[in-house]
Length: 369
Image (cartoon, rainbow, N blue to C red; front, side, top):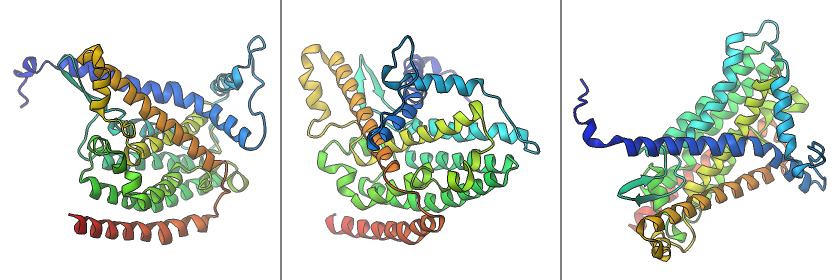
């Protein structure tokens, strides 16, 4: 039986308060910033790439706010639309599928560090919600659950096009999850850990960033991550010209918005993982944690750590935003692959290259050490 007698000695209040602040912060960044804004970003970025103006009609008293009000009007429209369920559909699963798609994209952030470790007024603050020693395995496990949302949506809709889209999702996710896991084995071998905070701390030296130590794994991981995100050029599960809208053809209103939001949140998660594993996480090139703390030392040890922490958090999210821009750049540049091309790329190209990368990485580690 659990012994509660030692709990008063642990002084859990600071730790619980820190945990709640981190959870609220991550939830606010995803649901309050990225989820509503990425729809506008995608419209404006595609418009710039195609020499168009983009969303600019919605206004309040003549003020369009660069088209940002379209996000608000879209939300109002989707919230007031009829929640239609087709005849013969499984009502329970039809309701459940959008939640299964959204939740994994949110909870995957639990192990992604958005800053380092700081000592503030005698309390050590670690800017990650759950510092698991199997952090990346947790992300793989959680991300795979999102697949069930799309597959269930396709099956529960009682629509042949939706079912075909769900089958495509299952095949594509199964194919690329195997390869995606192998593309990161080289990173785990180089840094000797699965704990993402340790990987981030090991990249304090600019030339120890994952992009320099595992360039092949980086490019292979991007391809797999794009396929997992189900967006162009890997959007065959929802190919409009073939399947109308794929697995969410029979969804409307808020439930349709949840599928839409899940794809945007997955982009944020993918970008955060790329930053944490390959681009130094919260680290600034050629500027160490101690250098920043010393530079702001005139503020005192505690305030110097606070300023350092804020700079690191800002650097991490700036890198995430840059990668979101790059992922959208790819999305609006490449045409959709055919189904057979997607399968061939995953099984015949990425998978063998990932295995070769593991073998070469192991050989180099043995030679160097």
